[in-house]
Length: 301
Image 1 (spheres, rainbow, N blue to C red):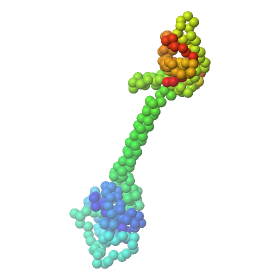
Image 2 (image 1 turned 90 degrees about the horizontal axis):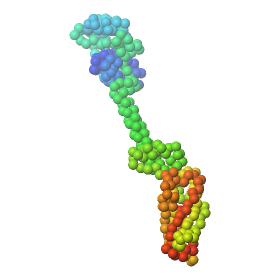
Image 3 (image 1 turned 135 degrees about the vertical axis):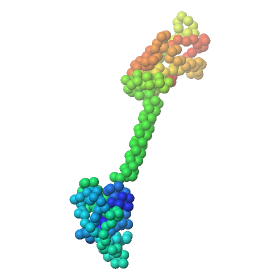
Image 4 (image 1 turned 180 degrees about the vertical axis):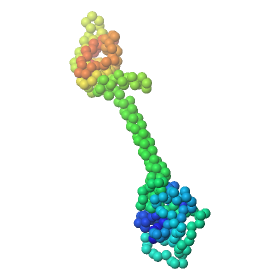
């Protein structure tokens, strides 16, 4: 006896084995129309020697080389009894063993499950192969699409973070890598910003200074000093804060000079103070005839 099941969608019939049914609780996929169904619901036993008579010549041609047509078949129906339990059916539930096939009845298209698919005869597929059906393909496409969207979102976030980092650290980047300054300045034209020179007051120092009164004009004072940039990159010119004191070192006059005030006329501030460069400054001012005994200098930004 051989086990046979048929597809409820297209009525195609297939040989199946107890092991195949047990592997997935009887669930199979039709190799003809890809409909998934439970083979146990439509399971039958057929004698090895018994085949069937096809309904017409067309069906007989489709089955050529698979099963030889005869005049009768013997089918014993099992209702919801798994074939792998080795349980014999009750004799009262057995259909008539032999009866002729009527021409108007739909004939089983028996297909040997062990044979490869050929001559348009397909084999049933087990549930383990269901990932290859249309629903399975859609289920696989959704995670792939989700991963792609997440990847694109992560790339956009990373690029946004890099852009913000460059924007806020543009001065330091241009200082450490001067070759990037033209590109940064071009980008700032689009975002209405400036690439300023670094302003690290800890690396700006006064080397020496001297305060002298003008010999020809009373109340006119000349201040000489040298500014040194100890940084390994160019820096902006600092503000110069000057405090004049009396004999008790009390402040009499305090003033802050901008670079355009203490630099010579026409001096270009754009390049700043080059790395390790010294800048000599001469600054003249009046004291309103106050008696100046000392002074203090301070550089800041």
